Image 1 (cartoon, rainbow, N blue to C red):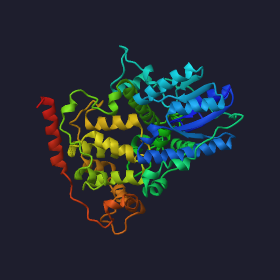
Image 2 (image 1 turned 120 degrees about the vertical axis):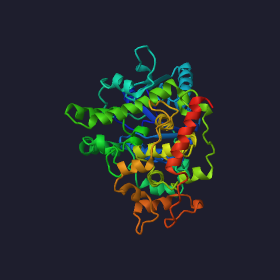
Image 3 (image 1 turned 45 degrees about the horizontal axis):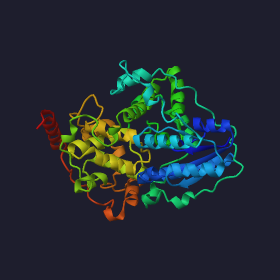
Image 4 (image 1 turned 180 degrees about the vertical axis):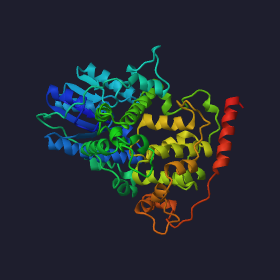
Length: 470
């Protein structure tokens, strides 16, 4: 029986349950669909998807298969492929945001009405959101109890890559990836960001192996060293599914059993990812509205085009730690997790700008963009989200820099202004940004948009007004 395998955010051949199910039935027609959801991705995420699809297509070709690319509404594309190939089943991995759930339910109903099997599979998470419940049968709203509920669960062994992917008798036509121009919005920044990435499943496996061997043991302290290489750097691989969370869990869990002190900290981060999806599934307004009640009246600024917001986007707030982080993101498509919290806190608290402004900018600039993690991260920092310590936590960027970048290595790496011989990384920012910004490495450093003391005082006053209902 011929099956269609619909790739989405699962661009791998190993530990791919949808692929395994399709291969077990007979010939497989792998497809990726460029629908409105793909077109709505931010510039960096769309570029990262493009290079990920290139790698996936090459991997399939090496195994005698091929990736069929089609653009259009997903149901129309699948209907067409079913008619062309005679496929009797369609397999895919589940997504959990409300739009994807609604789309996939309609597709399942339509396919089954035509006597075509439609099977969705787990694989993007360690724990399906509806399988984790409190003692009262509700969902979890706080991370630590969630972690305790799932930390001893066995997600099962990851699957090996299928030995064979049987081809259909006749391949359907496919569109050319180059014609889609997914990376067009990156403009001149594309080649700069590309130099900081190694896309694809093989690179993901290499990175995981290297991290487990050399970085996992010291992960507890190394993950906060912003200038070092203490993080896993697996985020974009997990976001696009070039690596499954089960593969990462399996590798780290073995080290826990061997007595590794840093491995459990990494496992907690994998579960934090599950927790974000757990909240998004049960409270989908997390993506677009304040998660906590009562925050709609908070007096955030909402103009994404204001001069102050532009300065934040450009890494020109005048606060070195904030600006270095914003430039790291623009050059590499990533940002260290510690500094993500710092720049989000500065925007939402010192500058009193709405978290959705920052969320949208991250969505445009991050190659590891993920809907659940991006939304929960911003709301967690802003105070409107699932956070045990609400708004009055105001990160001081200077204090954070002293603690996590004491020698200034990170700041010098990304800020060219004021350095006689700036490093290549700092200069790449000016090569990547739009020319209309008119920025140059010999520009003077700007004065702070708002002083740290003044910003903190203003933020706390705003919180007190919200709390008192004024």
